[in-house]
Length: 236
Image 1 (spheres, rainbow, N blue to C red):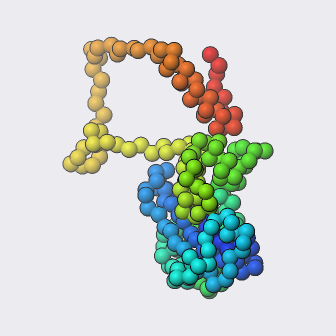
Image 2: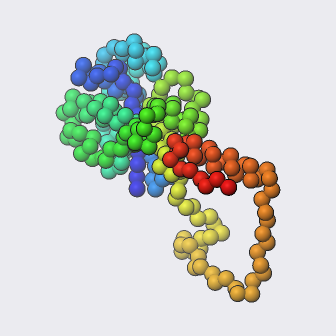
Image 3: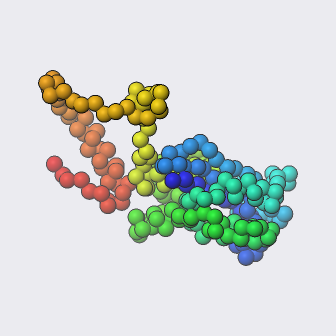
């Protein structure tokens, strides 16, 4: 399964007022593994950035003066996301702006939903943690994701942070990676399962000491807290 975690920065809040996208950041996940493949672009919006938006992302019109326009990069962008599931925090906002840009230029693809599935991580978080704060910063704190490098919002940085948060929210990176010792190099396939000898020596049992038990209990409590107390462990 291919997913793209995506975020945008804009000149303002309303595409209906012809506000524009000025930054796109997207991170690729395949089979729940971060691939390192990403898409990132700054865009010239041909309009002034609202002061409120500037305070959020810190991207100025002067910085964007020599950047490409959306029609210049639309083919590369659509090729990167095509066929993937887009994971977006507060998806209606970003989807609305992307569709505004596509409509504005008369692109062959009129809606990003026509070539991608959309998953709103904010809606998912609200379902998992009803009545709690579910901003990206709040989720970072809940799932102990380090966002200390973020002083201003940026599309690529927010996508990287959201990718980590999303994987924690949905169960962590669960794909198994076979190392060289468990793979047949000539066929690149897992080696055949070996039978266990009936006369094998008994396994040595090592009992956890008090420090290890305390560390284990602390880990369970962190997981329980991160789940919003949805997961509860039997008390022993």
